[in-house]
Amino acid sequence: MKTKIHPEYVECNVHCACGNTFVTRSTRPKLNVDICNKCHPFFTGKQKFVDAAGRVEKFQRKFKGSYFGKN
Image (cartoon, rainbow, N blue to C red; front, side):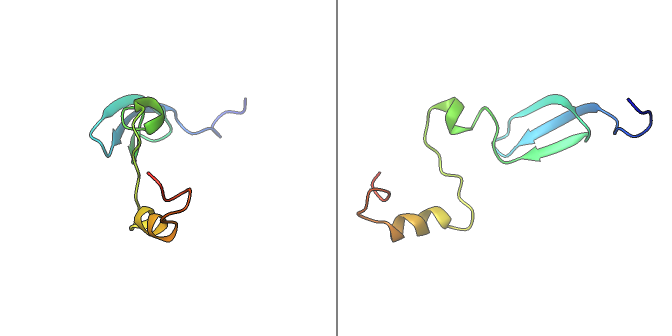
């Protein structure tokens, strides 16, 4: 490998919107994430909508009564 062309790899504190924090390694010392393994539906088994500006409700109103609009 060439020297002095790669970024420094340091310990990284990751903060999730759910309040979970953990330490990993990255090229940045701090990361803020919206979803992590403690709150992601794949790992928790619970359905959770991550809504941005009412898009989920808009989708549900648009397709109400169709296959996608059923809960």
